[in-house]
Length: 322
Image 1 (tube, rainbow, N blue to C red):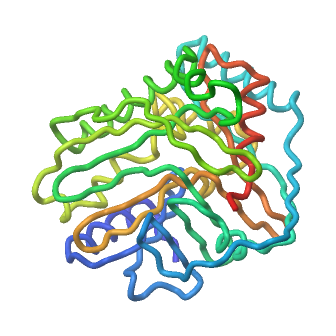
Image 2: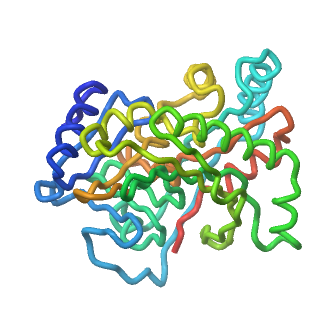
């Protein structure tokens, strides 16, 4: 079922070259890749990318339970201190630090997926789900666009929008990711433009509402991009917004500092319909391991990060968007 890195990107090239509509899924490290035609998908794989979906809409439940059991602050602080030391040493400037959190719910993994409200959703064979607010890339005609998302604040705080946009740490973090994604798009396309810079969107986060800050960056692909879609993806992954910059050394630090295997969390999934591509970064992610559900979450660390606020952001991102 899972292809290795070389086989996976080659399979994506084959499917896109023949203009076959397909779903693809990549792990964070690209060592496991799924790529299969939509007309041959297993009946326990479901996706949604905005108005593209292969399952019916479900009404959300009236009553359910949800509990989370995050790591303690001292554990988080120890890992963050390691990241800050790497930053001081010049090995990274921005690193997305994540943890897995055991959760409990009266709902099954499939029910959580069905009821969750999000622009991008994936359910894979009872193993994991995501309900992501973040696009990765979309390609229409010969234009490629990416939408890095960096900066989160509780929407109920006074002057929340003004606060997040004026926050110098958040702005610096966002600028670094925009620069990284501009450079990444420059590898595969030309005429790179930042069409929108630091615009704010509201998302439902369980009992809370969050404001998240994004930018839109575009480039022009060559006419033959459909013949080489797997190659294009291989040059862009992993996504900069959930790894960091510089990407290669930052990914190595992530593997050393984080105490769990990300697996498909912060990987990417997408659908090519034969003409255009839509894809999403797999954040807001729940994985089933035995009888336990694990929610994986985190946020970007820079030299100006505050350990307490970063810890609280990690916990805020553990929610069901009903």
